[in-house]
Image (cartoon, rainbow over all chains, first blue to last red):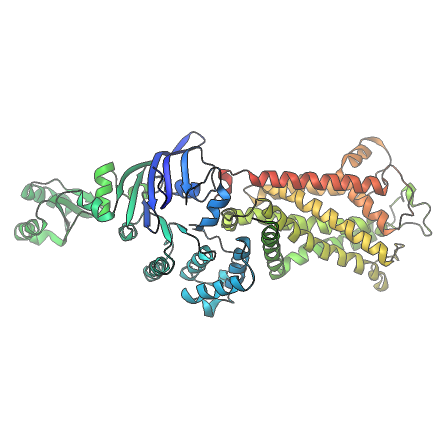
Length: 313
Length: 278
């Protein structure tokens, strides 16, 4: 299972909190330099996995290695290789941006001119230079996230762990954040491991593991996972969902899946089906869209549950 | 991780502690003003009913209550500062700062060292200031003249011993705060353990009339902190009595208890538990 250029290897990792199981025999491998995603609904075990990787929880069973070092037996070496950005902020709101970075850099054993240079470089790259003397508590959510990220990258880690990094960011700040991650990978070849329950984020990853109830559902590049499903998707929103549903189902010979106020159909030719629906029942339709299967569909097909469902429950 | 990295990490955390302190002015008020007010008010109010302990017989002037209370107030300032410093462990865990430190490649003892160095520095600055300024209050009529020894050697020795007490109480606060997940819980421990511990340490009353109280005082590790500091303020002129152990006993008990709290803190931090993550 272990290969020398793997950044992270998990082999049959299980974890329980008290008697509640959180992870069950999870195995996967992350090649060095990859942009890797752990996708699953809340409660799927991805944050537990993240904490195990960050060496914050004891490894109960199975093996977990980062850069060839065991998280269980050599956590100090693992921590040196890792940059970690938590879901909850780990910067001190009462310190300025520079003070936070200085404090964190020193904890990682950096100091002197080297630390100063690295700090300035990251402030510059993340467009924080003009806010370097501001108290972190006075910054917007997006800027604070950037400070977190800069903090996680100070010691030039080989692997960057991001736990739900775009939580609480507006769409513009979100885009900016991912642009920064992309440029970081280009500049330093950092392996990036991100946990998320958002499809748009997962689709950007090079490889994905889909987790559900602590188990690996499937693994692979997002495009491959999507291609593994056949057919296309037609989603329709109508004025009177209940009465129209039966009509469309009969017309397309396909069963509808209802999410919110929209009906989704799996059909071999979505464009043809769209024309059919519009011709016959066009008056009832508010909007209709044609798409390839999404990661949401992959998850749904393999587990029988939606990605967002758990969150609402 | 070599020694210099250990030192650098500890001082980075201690430095953060100081920065945070000086940005929260209310903490200064809480940790210094309340004890000083206690000193002046209790000193004035209880002066008539105070019965001077046996060991004070040889002093030139009769011992006033406010003078008796003087070292106790210095230790109360240290205790309050230690409590404020260590209660932030619970906040740091809640806010997420702590897990950022736990994910760093530093020995876990850095977390204890950083807190102890930071807390001790703040406590010694504040209590030291009180020890210097307190006697001057007699010029404005807020305290009686104190008979303490003002020589430089004595001040230095008292300062060193005060530092030891500060390490002791910060480490003790650490042991209490680390397993807790709510600041309310810490407040409860403060009211039923830490404050009573200070009250029955010979800081507030001598309690040398025998009975169960004198046993409680003798079993209380802080008694030896108070007595050690008291002796150093008077340049060893005071006789040994039940409620005032000798300097060597005071020093030994305080040092052993300090070490115990420190080792316990390091042990606690070294255990990875689900409690550490936010």
